[in-house]
Length: 302
Length: 331
Image: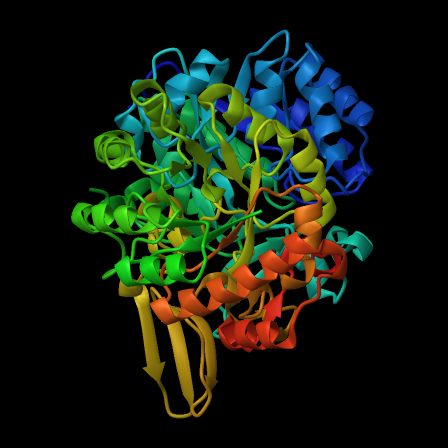
């Protein structure tokens, strides 16, 4: 039923603002989990400094010692010179692989001594020629852009590229100069008071009919639904299934993905249980060439 | 500082040229550009006429081929590049690396400008495109404060073009999936945000609603007006309060900082609005022309005339304007 080799499981960076103790406890738990690859660092807002780069590197070493492959992730929206200088340090270190979430990071990695990098899902790679260009500059692994459907991915020649798919988590839909969490509290970004720490799973934005449409997370806007693509465990083009950290049900989610990749459960069995791990519904529409918010049940798959 | 104006069709192009644009930008009638709307844009014949009209009057012409083709769509985008080369446009505005790579290889003499859809917000990102694809200019997303723009201009290998007036994208251009999350189609993969076929205006007993693929974006009492349902300008419930959680209907207006933009070395100011009427293009171009001329002649005494402001306010979304991210407190 399951194609070989067994898919790897990766853990996305934490998108929200968690306090230092929570982050450290979380990664101690991750060290014991069956996850293979862990992406670390602040990707949303450079003002969030509960952990310094040194703190992140300590977590990175601990996870490495626990047998995980660690990748340092970079900021998705780069505006300030200070942000570029932190990114330069990350891209120039040689101990860990880097996930480039912006073309700034690609530029810095491609000029570094060890130019291998992971292309994050927010890089716009829509066709073979773009992929080949970045391969020539050191792209080693490709986290698929969220809009890509299964057929569009199958159209690529993916030889020599590890392919990673966002398989569980809210989708990062947009970034802005403006902080929407601060705006909700009638504050500007410069005077935010780190109010996003009140929302460890983001701030829900509902329509006036109370549908959970989006989630505000500082300067980032996420999907209201959690994307569940555990079905991709059977897709021959995918090497790595990515799971996004969330505070509730986390161990359960990892356990279900691990059981499915090892053939102990079918994706359909796990999906039933996974549905309970999202309070705001699940989606898989992009993968099936539909609206991202949609959920196409297994019976209706084309 | 160059004034770059929108040409959604031939009448708009002529209006912009006559009103004093230094350059106009246009798109083809397909998904290769970010204003893929019914009834808009140019056939090849119209492009030829438009280019003739503009260039013979000293106005440059740019062609926007600034969306992202999937593997099997790439030939259509490459054809658009070939057409631009054949018709001798002054520059191509590109976003996709694959399309840029093709343009560099096939037409090395063709000027490439990085589109705002290319999402380059830092000097490192702009310089990536300069080094890899020999771009001659970068148009930057509406996310930087004026200080950050100045820093970018100083550290970029190529001249920088910024947005000066028009509809305000609140999110980083080229990386906004709000429309495709709601409908399947968005700016990157389809060249339009909130495509018309998903938009519904509905009268209920007391309200006028706007919906996008069924999602309620806004509703107003029956006798009020409501804007086009772009997701970032809707009214939603957050923490039990209903309001414009992301941004109000408003337009970007940089008249008050034009002299500053010039002082920090911005190469060109762009007006958004290929989807707007020729009358709109004419009025905005006239105001921006007068303002840039005054700012260039005497930056120290530059002052925004109340008539300019009035004209632009009347043409703005929600009849109001903002400096957007240029002004830190907006952020």
